[in-house]
Length: 116
Image (tube, rainbow, N blue to C red; front, side, top):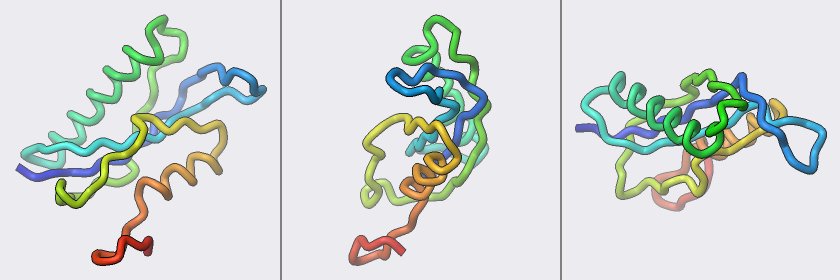
């Protein structure tokens, strides 16, 4: 079995952003998992994200079902890869979306941990 890092975005949602006039329109999520194939890893990650979305943020079914799209998938060494600090990184604009994607998809130099 191979270990994968899958970064995906969820769009077409509408969540009230308390204290701001702009609603949350999407999220970026990263999952680390082990699967037999890339297709199975993608299907498992999508299922896990949708289940967690419905249990945590969409219990009343008012936020909508997100449209998931894969941004990056790569094989990893699990003992050298840190897990993301949060399950979902929400954004209100494309600039925030890009920042979250940069943070989750950047590569590091092998020995020094510096970003490339």
